[in-house]
Length: 534
Image (tube, rainbow, N blue to C red; front, side):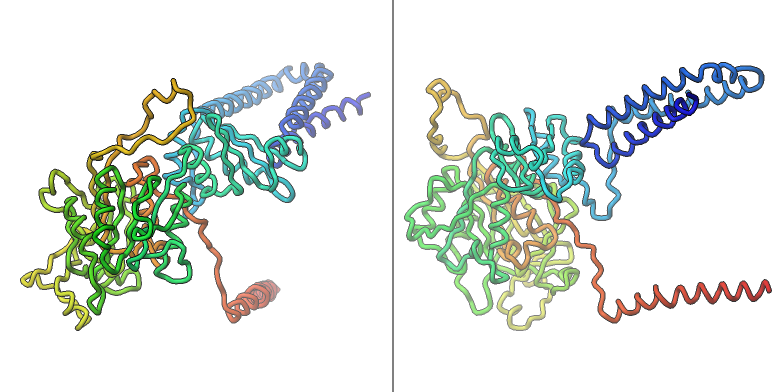
């Protein structure tokens, strides 16, 4: 009988320990964990009741005194432990101690989560070799930042009925449900999740048109460094549909155009095209002009686009910005380094530099034009200057600052933005809602005309868009033009590759060092110590 009682004690302890171990390694098995814990507790209580005589004797004499002290210490410790857990459950705090902050969500993701106004249900479907833990660790951060999020983890192999209900055809698939709308992601990476949330909250896709026909950058070109495939892919991730537009063929700017982008036109637009862009902008359109300085050889400048910018209070300089700090990027003085200003487009990029390549100055007209007051978005450093002798610069390749000959000392404005109330609001989109709902005014920002001008188109090209803060600057610009200020932020970072690349000789050196040299030195030292003691 005593043996059976002793076994009960050990069994209770084993069940409690088993529940703790399972809680660490398989937290999803909640029912099993709870069953083991309660079973272990009940068996332990039964064991304690069978030992009541021994427990009573422990309170006799000195043993009672020491036992009371021990019991008191245990109770105090348990009290502190319970208090710490109670406080931590209500004052949750997480620290990311990695160098690249790879476990911290980006500013944009935080912004999106803070905008949730209703419960967001997330269904994570996984199967095969996938582990629930990897998704649980990721979405724990989302739940930590927003109480609106609830997450369900479903092994599709074990629960095929639920997978069929959600029409899951591949794993992993993450289904988001929000206010009657559904969106999917096929990866648990932050970029994929954030993109899905953008589409879910925005509700409709906006369209960005890249003007073609004047030597502009091509959003489908991924084969050259000057192509805009990377910029186009970034816009698609921002829930934009990307298309190309040849104004001379189309005859007009499509009604579904959210943003019109003219990236690096090498020749001037036709008078009719310039008129179309002007009317589009005046009537609530959004236009991004990226006007490069004249190339060596005297390329014709897009005078109509420069005149359009000036009519909206933005002066495009006939110069080239020289910045000795371009050497920091391994380039020369033709690559000015821009820093953000307080404008909404770049304010959240504070401390983040942008790299431009052969850029001209673009500055607000002092006092504005017809009531339109532009603002600088980014500017070069104090060591830079605007070189006005462009022909001499190309001829000598030796820039020299000479303010007496018209050169302007830095900092130099590299881009500017301006907005104004739309002269004529665009008609509301067609809807199938009942008549009573049609009469209700649509919520959203009032229509505005918005124009952004940069003195360089290289910064968003395949060659440069991955440098410093270039991608964020370009995407923030388009979102500001589209009046999506809530998406202006720093985006999720790509996981940092921290592998060490070794040559064959270095690998051999490490092999000999770890297998022969270090063990040999330790053995030699052991022989020395043995011989000395002898």
